[in-house]
Figure 1: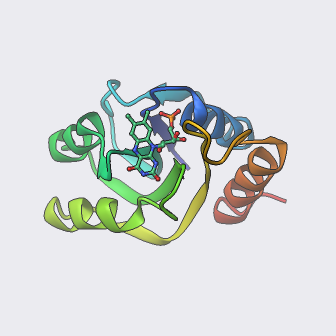
Figure 2: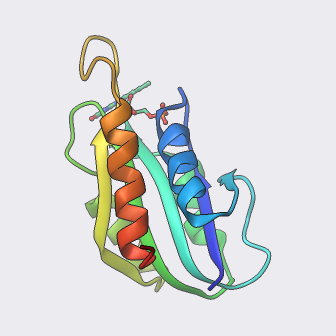
Length: 137
Ligand SMILES: Cc1cc2nc3c(=O)[nH]c(=O)nc-3n(C[C@H](O)[C@H](O)[C@H](O)COP(=O)(O)O)c2cc1C
């Protein structure tokens, strides 16, 4: 099974979660500027929310991708909102990409909100999510 992990992360929170998933998946988590070079079965799309929106590099990645992706799992961190799933789902619909209804989300600190997150429990939960969807263990 070909697994890819891409992340966009301004302050490292989403990268931390992407790397936890990478440990489980046994592949490298790459910044979203790395386009897919071949088709894959699973893509973990690790992203966040800034000023209530999905970051442009994430939008650009989904728009530009012409490689076949079996299924995308949305993985997000945010200080306030409960997920980026809705925004990503809209983009996936637009670009005809298959987004799983399973997702991972955890808090990511910003200013005084969600202080300390993602923490060790968030990292452990992200690994558990990856194990479940990849059917490991
Ligand atoms: C400029 C900026 C704007 C943000 N706007 C929001 C927001 O509208 N809603 C929210 O829930 N979190 C917001 N956050 C918090 C981030 O989503 C949160 O810190 C996230 O974990 C950042 O991930 P990253 O470190 O991978 O970039 C904002 C953070 C920044 C830096």
